[in-house]
Image (cartoon, rainbow, N blue to C red; front, side):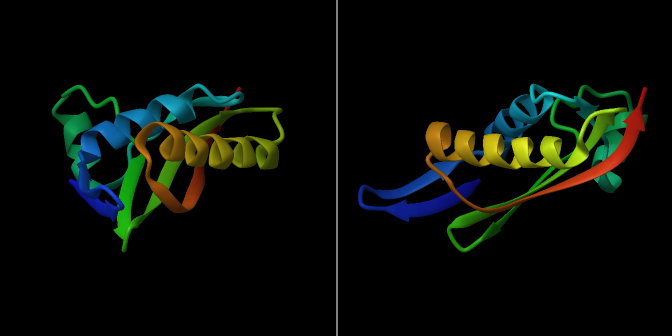
Length: 115
């Protein structure tokens, strides 16, 4: 649960909702082929064949701001810098607009490139 305070009081948003929102936003950016499993917990879920719609999304809280890490696969032949900038902009915008959460940074890691 991510909690932060505003003029209305303390608000809590589930990390599961935020991961799904971030995952959906990132996967629908141009040039992104998919998200990659990262870390032991996500790796075990893959080994056990459990459904994991939020693979590759790691969320940390720094005070009342979020730090988001994304591990992605991109399509070959696309400008990687443009893809990364687009993802950072869209994820930041969606989190601010739909969840009302302030984003400190969005870190995009390109783990794979496919043809």
